[in-house]
Amino acid sequence: MDIKKVKRSEDYSAWYNNLVKNADLAEHSDVKGCMIIKPYGYAIWEKMQAELDSRFKETGHSNAYFPLFIPKSFFTKEASHVDGFAKECAVVTHYRLKVDPDTKEIIVDPDAKLEEELIVRPTSETIIWNTYRNWIQSYRDLPILLNQWANVVRWEMRTRLFLRTTEFLWQEGHTAHATAEEAIEETRKMLEVYADFAENILAVPVIKGVKSANERFAGALDTYCIEGLMQDGKALQMGTSHFLGQNFAKAFDVKYVSKENKSEYVWATSWGVSTRLMGALIMSHSDDEGLVLPPRLAPIQVVIVPIFRKDDEKTMVMEKADAYYHLLKKQGISVKLDDRDNLSPGYKFADYELKGVPVRIAIGPRDVQNQTVEVARRDTKEKQVMSAADLEHKIPHLLEQIQQNIYQKALDYRSEHIHTVDSWDEFMDALENKTGFVSAHWDGSSETENKIKELSKATIRCIPLNNIQESGKCILTGNPSHERVLFARAY
RNA sequence: CGGGGUGUAGCGUAGCCUGGUAUCGCGCCACAUUUGGGAUGUGGAGGUCGUAGGUUCGAAUCCUGCCACCCCGACCA
Image (tube, rainbow, N blue to C red; front, side, top):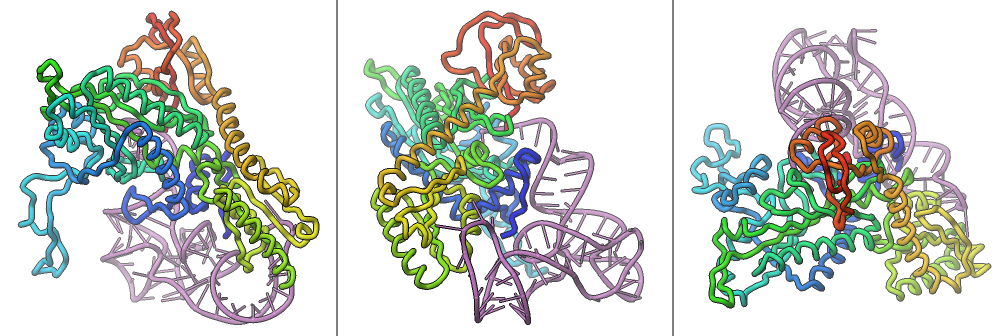
């Protein structure tokens, strides 16, 4: 395979890019900023989707689908929303090609110009709220709790595999409520769903919080978020949940009649996570040997590698390997038996480490003799010889242990990388030398936030939920502050 | 979009300064021997040198435009 080895500690960026390609997750396409998600990477995304989707349904949501194209006039109805997205919109202006009679080349037919341009959705609030107008008359029509799985396009200047691509896959929830309280409750509920998913499935600890005004979603009154910390000490926004107030209801004239027979504007939320989570997953756990997948997301949880020399050994070993395969499969474990005989065991070991398979079981003639197998775990690289009779009850337990261990490791890393500081010098020192989150006082103004960003390249990642209230002084201006906020350099 | 860098076979590369039809490793195909940590031998296949022009008898090499990617900014999920 001749993998170019780049150490994580030497060049994090190159390590990340290599890992994404070498582990067969994705590759660059010939379309600028757009990636091809390969089968193995897509299998992981599908597992994420399945986990999230069942959580959405458990919390009362249904899936629906809205158009990829949004008429420009819809898009421009909510002022701050346009401001936020205008710079990164792909626009469809024509609907037909033709052969140029002079050059014989295929060109855009100038006669096929659209009356009204269509925006390729960067997010779907506008078209959905334009639709909700027709769906909502009475308080009895509320709430509407919808989610859609979709692709969206944001024409970013600089892209990175999974973390920021021109087109990306995501889910976007769009809910409509009769009261502000109910909408806020929904916003927070979905943030909890995201946090639960991130920690228990991705094994990535997250900090739940609220964005500062500067970092707020275009059109939102409040943006809640989960923030993760990557192994290079940079923060990553992993999901957002927005309380949109009545902004979109007003822009699209969506009203309902209350019990009291009064006409009221509807309250909105939206929330989303994207294929960026793949980036979070990769950057949180992986090492110089490759990907490290938490068992709950691994497309292959256990791989069985048979080892044999001659045909009689092969027959003997394969018989056992096959039996173990079915034994584990019966327990609902996703298991693969790699019986390719043109590759050496050593090659396979390295390859499955690169792909992040949590547990590897090797079985050779010696094991058949002794009724044992060699069990190796990806997270710690530990190997043990296990009695074959123990496989059935020990493997599920081991997978669970690995899931917990990966999470704990990430949690320990994060704990070591939250620094509390009270002065500008300490602040800069923490960012430059210690990396990670920096908890510091801030006077609450956007000017100060911008100034800090300019001077340090760090942004306010969030104001943590249930934040301790304490009086202090802003690290930049010295103005009074009543709580600390979390700063970090971020993706 | 601004600054810097890179682009040669599926992957990683040498050659470029000083122009003469492309080097090596991995992978791929065939056969044989192998298989408990990335096997070995022999024989093979694979390249419009990112792309479009220009200079030249002749361009991977020199010049120009364009494209893609990487790093650093600005923007962002």
